[in-house]
Image (cartoon, rainbow over all chains, first blue to last red; front, side):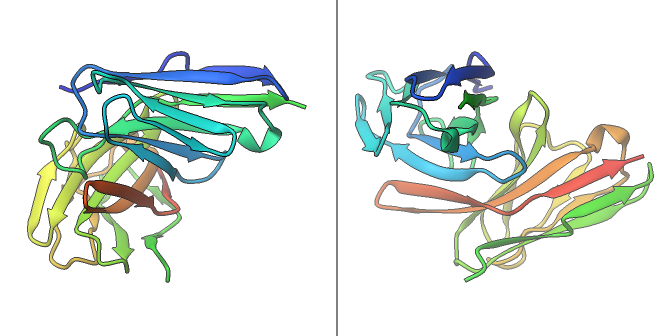
Amino acid sequence: GQQVMQIPQYQHVQEGEDFTTYCNSSTTLSNIQWYKQRPGGHPVFLIQLVKSGEVKKQKRLTFQFGEAKKNSSLHITATQTTDVGTYFCAGPPVGGANSKLTFGKGITLSVRP
Amino acid sequence: NAGVTQTPKFQVLKTGQSMTLQCAQDMNHEYMSWYRQDPGMGLRLIHYSVGAGITDQGEVPNGYNVSRSTTEDFPLRLLSAAPSQTSVYFCASSYTADGYTEAFFGQGTRLTVV
């Protein structure tokens, strides 16, 4: 079945440092979505990328969808303590139902003030 | 606008007991899903629905049943609880419009099976 991989699972950064994480799917994705989960909370939608090579920015966060639509990256510029949480990527396979999302295991980001 | 509402928030069951986790959404979304979240395992899809009357299995469906009699409700039933079903359960609803999709998650149900 489809697998979505996020490695590593944990990363610790000093406040102000940049941070980049990657997401790789075993199959071509229809689209890729990123979610953020704060400790003790529920996943919250951040963004969706649909087109091959697409890049979207949200303030200090930059998201990119790979040319082959099998990988994605999230880059955070000048991390802040408010960036703490677990970031998940997820996507349906091409032709799959949009509700059939396969999530990666997530990367938990901690930020040292 | 309540979004996605899950009840209960916490539950302790004895092995072998059955129970239903409730999920309701008031956004008229077609799609609804159930996930379980275990430490280091991310979110794993249990069952999903693409509309009222239509359900399908996800990655880890064994031991769980679902039904979707209305657009708003998508209950998850544990038939005979086992300690391996101790987890945090999230319900989500989503819509798709012009290629755009976004999932909204409930607050979660923390289930412990002893």
